[in-house]
Length: 322
Image (cartoon, rainbow, N blue to C red; front, side, top):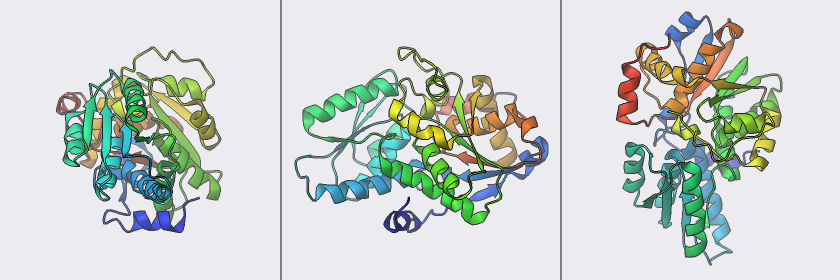
């Protein structure tokens, strides 16, 4: 449940509520009543700022009785780090960030602009997390983990609340799955009020570990993710979190990598939206399952807007999905 205080933290932001707009052209082409929840329109261009603001408010409250820690440390492919660093800057909380070596330059620039200390270490997110945890222990910092923080889940629930304020007659919500805090929060809020409304998770085929974990299949934690959707690149799922997510998910789509960037182009071409591959995966998944969705009223969550210049160029040079 989202508390009144947590709700006010989000509702007091000048970007809240984010737009929920009909994708008119794509709706006609796909024969689906498609709506887009524009989380790319937050102050930092990502949904994660919601949970970060709530999480840091909880951190400050808890620090009143714990004064032994000297700051916070996070690991992130980008958006979580930007969100936490933006929130901690407001309260002058020292923040250290670990990002993987292949992190998007624009995201690194945003992190640096907050004044946070940044370390670029690890070939992927999970390696960066290993370094961050070790650094936190050595330097007496509080390690904040995205998928574990209840504040991140609460932030995601506010997205669902805003969607339901517009309408509760949705057939399904399409939600990208990275570490799981987004779909867990959205799913909890939706299922609390409308159990029959479907929650569909999308996962890139180039990073299938979460799909395997959620389907009770083994995964290879040594296999590096190979996906353009870097925000969804999970190599080692947190088993506790995947078990907590399962009750709120009706279906899972393992989306083909070859469709993610063409979907990005189609979003730009038809709806004038430039988003990250971790968001365009929603349209890719919808396209792959379009015949099952004919005539349905659907919301896809556009999670963020940051992407590498070369990825945008590759997407724009593609044929386009639709």
